[in-house]
Structure formats: structure tokens, C-alpha cells
Length: 375
Image 1 (cartoon, helix red, strand yellow):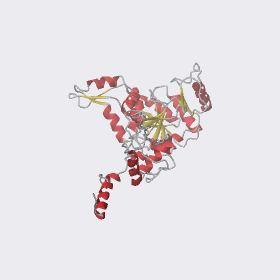
Image 2 (cartoon, one colour):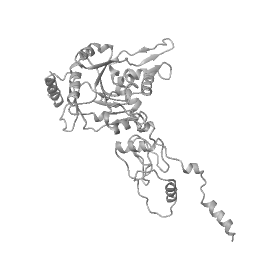
Image 3 (cartoon, helix red, strand yellow):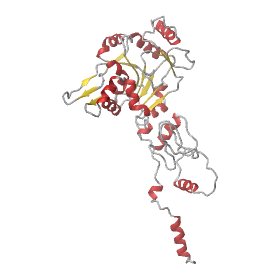
Image 4 (spheres, helix red, strand yellow):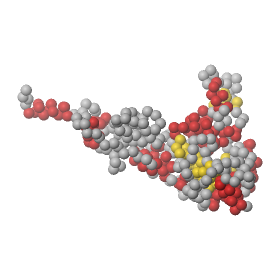
């Protein structure tokens, strides 16, 4: 059938136009959603939905990013070309997208996607923290009555490594005597409020707290320093710093990684009482923990109170933030007996009494050497 030239042109034009609104074609990929054309992950780890389909998801924090190999956003024309290529009739296999593998690359991508988003960590458009390090610090807690000497040695090792940041020791009423002795030796201390599971019932509106407070010390940095510090790093009271570790507080990659949405903390392991924990305290995380520790008695959650009786601070952190928990390199810290690797920067004694000469593991020997230098 022959059509006039102008009518044929109009028909061809209508065929070439997208059935989608222009606003949809120009939409941008969200940093917290799966980009168009990206297969969704079915769980933890990068598992493609099909053995024959390539995957382009970056799974460090269960987020997906669409980015070209040269680091620029694909244009609308390139997006359209991708759609056309997906409709190709040939059997030629498309190249698989490269997978990114470092914290630095992830932080650059987040900053590029949205410079002022909370997913960028600290925006470059915001005022920078003062070089004095007043918004960053090391923290530790008095966990036992034996922690006086270990914390003295920890503070000494930080100063010997020329750290730019001070150590703050958190304590409660139960450990006030040890805290007072530390203060007499020039160590900065900070009184914190007790935290423990609270059972609230209709008969007792004020709630009844679990008195075993020593089990919850791992929660203190999250609920006691909210909005007081930009970034803090918890160190075990029995840790010994072998060389400068200021990178934990100064690294742009670490600061960008902890955004309190996709990543809440970094540590050396996810077990009971890590040697280090890097976190960004804020009111939202504080409220999340306190709400979890509050049990409202009814038929649905009676079991939660029993569960908390067998829990501790570390298990609460795993329960709430397991999917938002990152890890530092395994050789950064050494804990317990065994050979200390040459590149380890922190060691942790496996005993609450490292001055006891009956412990001859390398960590205890290093601790006693530092103690002899201090005294």
C-alpha cells in the first residue's frame, strides 16, 4: 500500500517514539535501589539469579551501583542503546560488567551519586572538623575491677605511637573507684548512664531493669556519645597499640563507609567483644538500641525478655546490625595466644591480668614490656 510521503514519515516517527514518558527515560538510578537492568540479589553475597546471566551488583553493603568503566554516568542515549542491545537478534554474548572491590571505590561512587546524601558519609560541602581532633576520639570501657593497669598501658601505647587523638574511658557508678584512680594518672574519664533490658508492664509503668550491667558495656559507645563525637573508635581495655592507628579515625574511606544506614560499625570480627569498633554515634542508633532493650509485657513478646537474659551487648549488636556490620583486615589486630604477625598494629591480651608472668604468649610479653617502660 502506497502512502503519501508526509503520512509515511508520521507513521515511521510514531513507531520510533518510546511508549514510556520522557521523564521515565531520563530517570536516574537511586543509590539505594537496584538500577535498571541489574538483577536483584536474593540475599547476602553476590549470587546471580541465573548461571547464564551476568551480575553487576556490588555486594559489600548490599547496595547496587550502575557506573560505566570510565567513571561517568551513562547518558540517556547510552541507556537507550542498552535497551536496543538487549533486543538484539544475534547470539553474541554481551561483556560482563566489572565488579568493584574496595572501600575507596565505593565511597567515590556514593559521593558522585549524591554529594549531600547520608550515603556519602561526610559531605565535602559541609564544614570540616577541626584539625585538633576534638570531634574524634578513642574510647574504652572499664569492664572489670582489673582494668586499671591495662587501661594505663593502653593509654601509654597510644601516646607512644604519637596518636593525635585522646583516649576517653567510659565508666558507670559500679566502676567509679577504678575511674578515679585512672583520672589521678591523667587519663580522661566520662561517666555514662547505665543501660540494661527494661521490662515494662501495666502494673509497673516505670519498668524493671536487669541489674547485670557488666554484660552491656559494648553498647556504651552507641548510647552514651550520641551526637557528641563525629567518629569514635572503641579499643578493648586489654589492647596494646604497637604502631600508629590514626588511620581508623582519619581515613576518608572509613568515614564514608560508616553512614549509619548501610553500615553502622566496623570491627575486627563479629564475635563476642571485638578488639576494635569504629562507629559514628547518633541519636537514631541510640534510640534503636534502647527500644530493642525495652520489653512491653504481653502474650506476643514474653519470650524476648527471656532472650535478653541470656544475651550481652555483642549479641544485641549482631541482632540489630548484622547486615550493617563491616570488617577491617583480619591481620590488623591480633587477639589471644599465638604468633603476632609483623603487620599487626594492635594486640589484645587473652587475660584480664596480663601482668601475671604465668602467661607467656606473645601478646602478654609485649604488654609486660610496655608496662615496664611505663613504670
